[in-house]
Image (cartoon, rainbow, N blue to C red; front, side, top):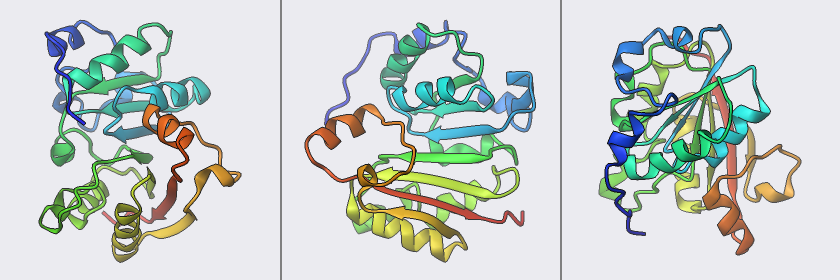
Length: 212
């Protein structure tokens, strides 16, 4: 699907209280941004923000950060959150390949919702559950490494299960049909659309001790 450009999107982002313009400056100091010691959860590729905003509303004692590399997408999330009064959420417009520049041993949980599957073999390193990314995540987690992934792409899911296991993760919860489980689930915009069309959603929650 072609990404629709939004004129002056980044400029509009910078006007929002919820947008962090220079996230590198907060590396290792995100608790100061939220002004509390609550756990920090991060979603990479949070799109238009429905999932993360609803998570922030559901769990007020958890801090949420949304990372999205496209300003034209992120501005939609900013527009939604401006209608709320939330003190436990913020957003950054950055590429996940640079994640080590923004966080240092301070993330409790990482969400990977409907990430780009990068189906071609030569692009495997770009997948957010590749060994390259998993090694980077080791450096941002506070204690346990805790990843929750949802995807409708079964090939990406199979790849992720293998890579997570290879990297030492224990697969605590796995489902090939999330809708038919008792797992509490807040849906993304994409998930709502494709679930309504009968697509099954794959889900994994994985954890390992952080030895870094």
